[in-house]
Image (cartoon, rainbow, N blue to C red; front, side, top):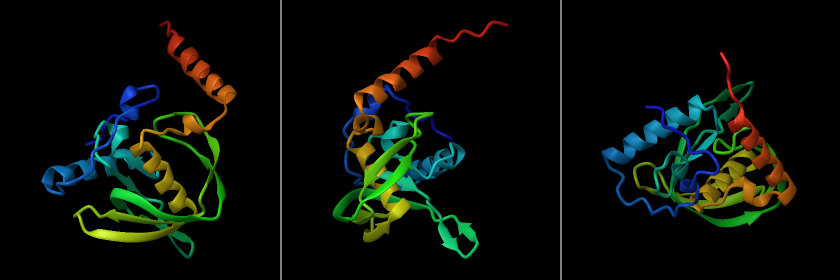
Length: 173
């Protein structure tokens, strides 16, 4: 089932997310729905908070490169915690909750993250480049932080004005 994605300025995007404790059938259904939503959007990552599930987990699929072919590589990170970060990378980031906004963000190029998989098993992952950027972006969501919080006041005002202008458009038939 495709879920509705909360859009800025929805206050739900600022909620505190509770840790995932139950990895049973309800959680599995939420995970499946989130993957379906993320792929339909389309996106490479989606935090539970973005679909009004206020639990600390995310789904992502940045794919894997196998020669000339990129294959799907869906992952679930529940209760993620970044253990270490190194290097810097600038990435043009978009966000499903901030449509039509692309921001050049500076993130850690390589991270080590501890998490639980979709069945609750503890894991550690070393992520680089796009995967590292995606994880950091989605963890920001779980902490109530949007890419809008990291841009200049001028860019934020321009984005807010764009949203206001779009909401004022009237369709005459």
